Length: 107
Image 1 (spheres, rainbow, N blue to C red):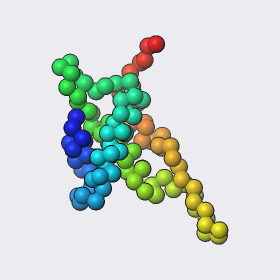
Image 2: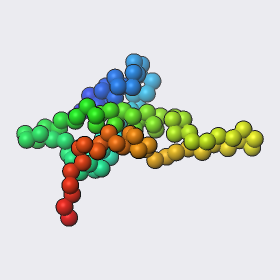
Image 3: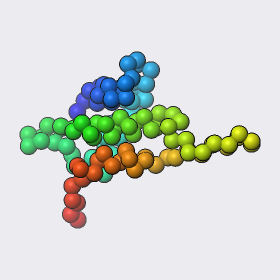
Image 4: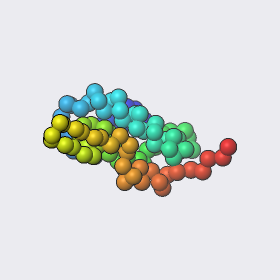
């Protein structure tokens, strides 16, 4: 899948209509797709070897990008002596989108 196509699909799912986040998405979206492929042990290719990414996997990529796009992962915050705590692991609800696409891995 071409990066621009993936980025456009991610933007559509996130409701992004401007180009403000394009550079970020062009870097992060392919990384998140690679994560999905590794996590599921699934290259998402058809019998002809053409990459076909299912909608829920693109939604995973979009939600993972959104999570990494700012304060989405803010877990706690204090005002006295200013303290912030961020969740760096993807939430289970996002990763759950990949579950139907997992393939058994034999060693």
